[in-house]
Length: 384
Image 1 (tube, one colour):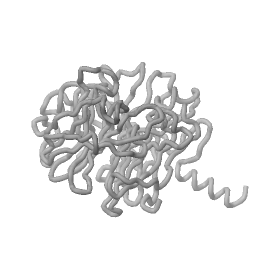
Image 2 (spheres, one colour):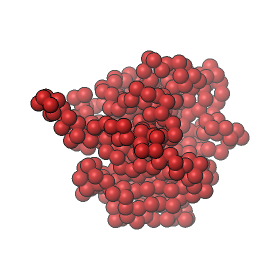
Image 3 (cartoon, one colour):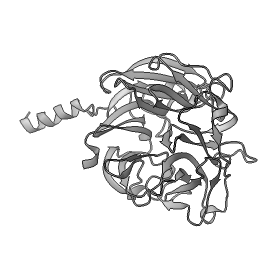
Image 4 (cartoon, one colour):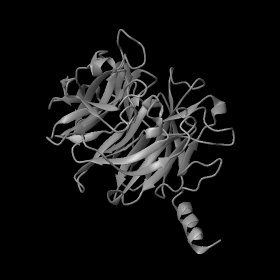
């Protein structure tokens, strides 16, 4: 073996990116074989004040309990993502994100597929969690709600998080989802439902995008360049269509959501899949990881193309640059890197992927039904 090749292989090993027939890129945090009838969903990620990384994922699929009381797993890493240990399993937690507020760890989502909006707190780093059995212990909204591991942001003395109301006359996927926002004062008890403000919800409208609008969901709470809160949502469109995001305006008090279909749809890289946007004060740019659709797959339903994860940035949320390809596989049918949750970690970006890849039982069920949760790092992301 010549020296340059040896050094290249050593570098890949150190980055956790060596590929084999049964090993996905990155560091494997969790693996569930398709033979179980359960799949890995909803990656959550945060960093505790002491530097511990905390990860989460839920289980979905025909043998899961997602429609009754969904299961989520909690993992920690004490070595910046090199190794991971499961420390907890939560009964009744689904489609959830992790975040730290005032030094305390929270997980926020729903209790099941289209369930109550809930929040839990852990005071011991993820080992034990509160139970949201009442409006004073984390049961924020009762009913049918939809979400994903979306960012919680701080702005004007409040925490903000986008959610979708999932009760509608139409129960079809997509048509049942209405865009909305919830918020709470930063000094309030987050487990007390009375402290939360819920905006009105904006329902599905079949006339949007000249009749090519299939759904909006998995919105991002973002502060735009004018200092206003907006809900930037994934938009489902038909096969072969251009990808869009929808920009819903939220009032300063968090009570009013409004949308102009003439100006609110913006062409957006990867806009038909879940994406997460965060603002970096140092570069004065918005950053996101998203599933790009390469030209050879333009004829397919863009929501089904998940074999590429790209790091993109923008000065204004409208005009986006592809900075680098973070993950890619040539096969679009059985491989996917999706539902990425990520954070700034100094000069790096760290992220988790819901990954569909080969394993010892023949790989994932398909590109959507992931069998791995994998951890990754993009070093010196601003120079990419």
